Image (cartoon, rainbow, N blue to C red; front, side, top):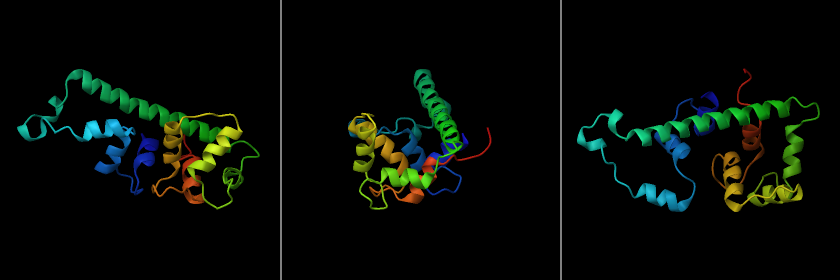
Length: 158
């Protein structure tokens, strides 16, 4: 849970705002975002307890999604820990390797080019999902600090 909160807590205060929560559980595909945003809240204003907002199948699907988030964040965290234990790993050198245009920032195009050069082929959507993990302030550029924050382990226990 710790890594999940660290991942989606954009202001790094240790708490998830409603907007952070929405970011974690909203689809990335524009079509589904539109579908979801066009729905009206059905139970909130009718005095229904929060335990009855969803049918059991929807509630189960939501909690499976929550669990999947936790499992993925844990898996990524373990991978990061293995990576930084490697004797020749240097985060600064990794950043320089990815910065193919030598601009001291990483663009989507940098990441795409390095992936292709290493025979890793991803769709534009997958590239976007990966890039969004690093571009925390969503300005279209990943600086060294953002890169380091995402590539380094979030905690030392486990």
